[in-house]
Length: 147
Image (cartoon, rainbow, N blue to C red; front, side, top):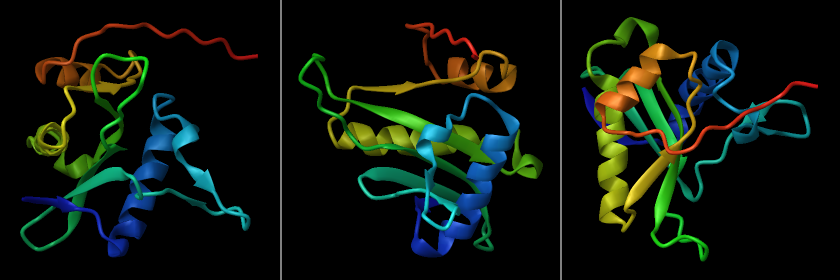
C-alpha cells in the first residue's frame, strides 16, 4: 500500500467515496459537498489536504480529506479539521484508515498544526473506536434536532 496526494485522475474514486459516505452516515455533513449548476456534486481539493491510499497495483482503496492548517485569531494554536476518512469495505480492518490518518497528521504537524479536530457520529462505533485508538479525545458534544 502507498499513500500519496490526490490527483485530478482520482476524482471518480473520490466522488464515489464521498457518495458512499453520504449514503452511509449522517456523520458526513453535506456541507462538504459542493453542488454545480448542472446539479452534479463535486468537491474542492484546493486549500485542503486530500490523500489517497492505493494498492501496489495503483488501485485507490481509501482516502482522507481535511483542511490544511487553520490559524484562527480566537484560538491559541493552529489546528486542522479532518472532514472525511473512507476505506473500501473490502479493504477495512487492514490498517489503511490508521495509515491515512497518520499520514494526514504528519503532513499537518510539519506545516505547524498542533491539533486536529473532527466530527464523528457516536452511532458509528467502529469509527469512534478507531479514533480513540489513535488518541482522539472527546472535548465537545454537539446536539441537533430535525425540524
